[in-house]
Image (cartoon, rainbow, N blue to C red):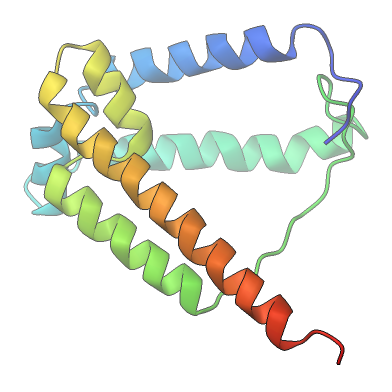
Amino acid sequence: MSSNRHPLFMPLILVGGLIFGFGLAYSHMARPEVVLDFLQFEDFGLVFVMFGAAIISGIAFAVLPRIRDRAPLTGDVYGRRLKSFDRNVLIGGGIFGVGWGLSGICPGAAYASVGIGNVTILWAIGGMFAGAYLQGWWRSRHTAADIGSTGAD
C-alpha cells in the first residue's frame, strides 16, 4: 500500500464500518437465528442482501478503474490480485463454513451483533481470534520449516 494516504483515510474506514454494522443490524443479518434460518433454507432474506452487495461491488469494481487511474484515498493503482486456489483455501473455507453454521454469524456481523446487545456472541468472536492465532502460528511454523529445508548447504 501507498504511504501517502489521504488524511481522511482512517476516519472514512471507521465511518464505513459503522454504516456496514448499522446496515447489518437494521436488516437483522446480525441476528444468528436469521442466518441459521438461511442456512436451513427457511429464510432467503440473506440471499437478497448478499446479491445486493455483490451487484453494487461489481459495478464499483467495473466502473471506478475507468473513471480514475488510482484509488482516491490511498493513491494505489487499481489492479487485480490473483490468488491461487489450493488446499489451504479449501480447508480454510471449510473451517469458516463450519464456524458460520455453528455460531450463525460471520465475522463482520459478529461485531454488529455485539452492538445490538448479543453478548453471548463474544464466545464466537473469541473462537475467531483463537482460530486466527492458531492459523498464524501454524503458517509461521511451516514457513520456517520450508525455509530451513531449502537452505543452502
